[in-house]
Image 1 (cartoon, rainbow, N blue to C red):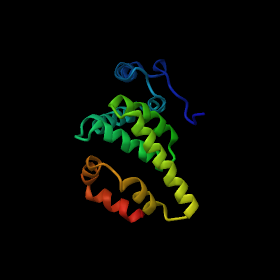
Image 2: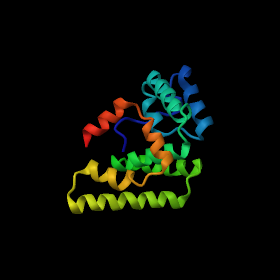
Image 3: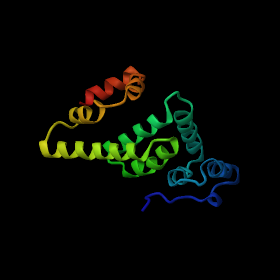
Image 4: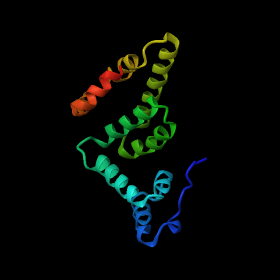
Length: 155
């Protein structure tokens, strides 16, 4: 159950209702995250602009983007993110077999970590990222140096 109530279009001031209209037109419905952020329409507008730029304004292949989002969702135990982006990955053209293989790889990595009691970041890097495709490696190398430094310091 949500801690912050989900708003409906009718709950918004008249001037902000077009946010929901646009979301419904673009996505077919208004997701709960947007219904929650609608309590602060200015923030919701900025959030949508940022998300739109990240999703549509980059050179990253949509298949790789969805696989990356799903992987982060799994690694952070964000089940909703993983499940939600499964369908988006399928729409982007990721074959079901690839998604099932990634899910199995994740499960094996978690099992190994728990059974062997190994340091999490190092093992995840070995088991999940080592066999990554050249395209994903190329995309990862485009990550700003400042973010790579944060990632390395966590391991």
